[in-house]
Length: 200
Image (cartoon, rainbow, N blue to C red; front, side, top):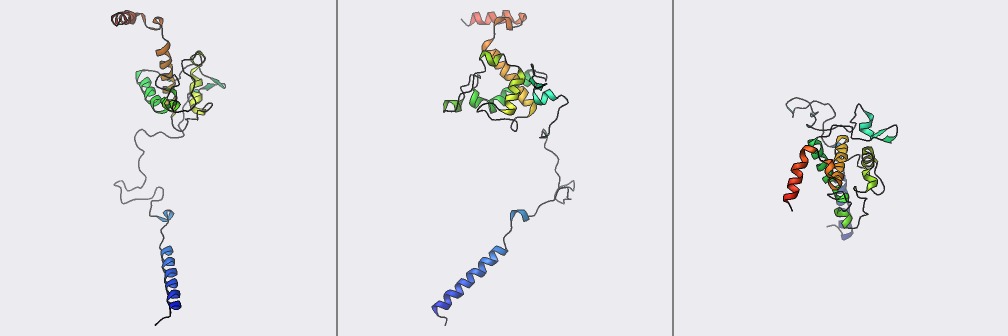
């Protein structure tokens, strides 16, 4: 029969042994079973562990032939116009991206009254101010890339073509709030005037 002191020592020893065994059985994440780059695999039918890229994936090192498309600048100055073809699909893409990334601060109309502004965040300027309406397109692109004031950079979140699509959509927003009849093609003016007269 062991004395109480010996029993206590035996229990401590047993506990230490169990702890050492538990540590010895640890399987760290860096030691988990995995495929090394370009190693063969029996799991996939093509016999390789490297998977093909998902359709539509864009490289983070995306490059364009024209530097102004990537930078929005020529000789360090913002370019005047969006350097990509602007059509309805491009504007729709810009509307979608604007809704995701810009609306929380700038609001749906671009008037600077987004939801987080209503919750106390600093209000951005309205896109409808004369100062911003007269800015070249490259200015808006540069602000998306580098940020401005309290606005952070969105370079990592928004890919190059989508930045330009957002710029084109901002221009559409500006026109929607500041257009005159002279901005409407002559062939469409009669229809527009008739519908405006019928709405009265």
